[in-house]
Image 1 (cartoon, chains in turn blue, cyan):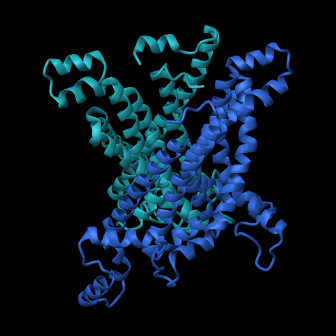
Image 2: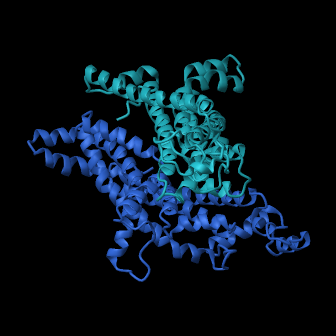
Image 3: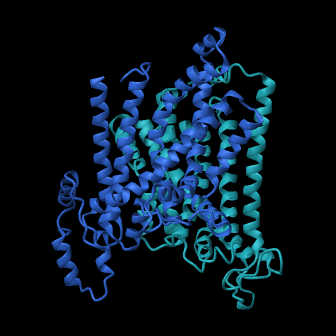
Length: 316
Length: 294
């Protein structure tokens, strides 16, 4: 176990380092690089630009710049926003909870609804329900999330007036119910994608399990179908889903970004877009790096949890 | 895994009737997808010649005509431009970007995957770790970060989308090459003194075409979605050139008064994307019986 942990940790650290190299490359690949914002300022002279570049250390060799950037990043100094001069990590930290709220709620929808659809699809394989679920999932994954969000806003906010068209909560009203009411539409929109993905994986995981010997044994013992499915099969079928949940985090993060843009949701995705609009490079980089960090972290955690939860996994 | 072993492993425990029925259903879905794609390509290719309005023709007298009522079949937008012809012209842009981005990303992914899988060792490991690292960034984040700092043109948007979409093909090809290069025919070619180039491109890659085609088809779908989103946010194709994405961006403002402006482009995107997804899914089942996707 210790060997496995150390190895996975080492792999993650290597990946983390590679990710930082790519992030740094993206930063410097863009026309103008980190100076992009300043080159657009009216009345900026070449001499002035050179002074800023010197001030920011951009006239030094790239490896040196990388090392400086990396050294600060590791200890949590991710620079300051060009827009309001706040520390980048502080800016992101202020927006992260809203994004997490959205991600967690749509994941919950996926786990509840997707598990049910997947299990039923696997148990009644090739039934009408199964076919509909298959086709439905593919259509759900083909519908542009941002457009679906607009449609939901049009129907439920504009036409029916049941749901608010966006925002985290009504200003001045921070009751739990108000938050929940605002969460319904965006969580459903993002949930469409997560349910579609989760139900597909759940179905194949369940199919793998219900054809195994121990399930037949349980049936042969005369256990009722419900007990066989829920106690014996589902518990085992859910195990690989831990790893799937980890692997799907990039999709979930991307989906959250798209959803936030439509629902004026004040989360990390919204901040990302605003920062792009302002060419606020430190914040853009910060969010890019943080999302990659979250992906690596969640994969690591999912791997470890999976290994802990399933004793059949041989730790290599 | 050899082909013979693959056939022996295929789906135990299902009757031939059920399997035939299933294949038929899957096939039907794939055929439907193919029909959708062909229809869209035809409509976008020829349609604009049949509509008596130009995509940029402004007629302020008929602003916000509702669809299905007047001479403008799909209605008009805030400048009185015909929505149908704009949708079709936008389709040209979106489909072109989808195909072009797919071609570039598939070529790049195949090349990188082939080199990594064939040569293996430290070069292969380094390349694949690079693939892993790029995959850590959610594609949309990476795409937007790149798209925001370039001058948006058809070519640059295509390139940026391709730059964030080649990794999965690379993974697929690498895995295929790794197993194919150990097979007897590859060893035979090597013994005969064939060059690495010949072995990779003439012997091995033709055997890996199936999974590449599947990944490529799904890539078209994803590229269309991504283009739409980037254009929706204003960092993609710039108006007045219509693209489904920037038409939606424009429609957002008039959601209350002219909802059709938002509905039609979205339906077009969903049709195109699901068409390619259906075809890709069907191809996966048809081309690779080993997978027997459950």
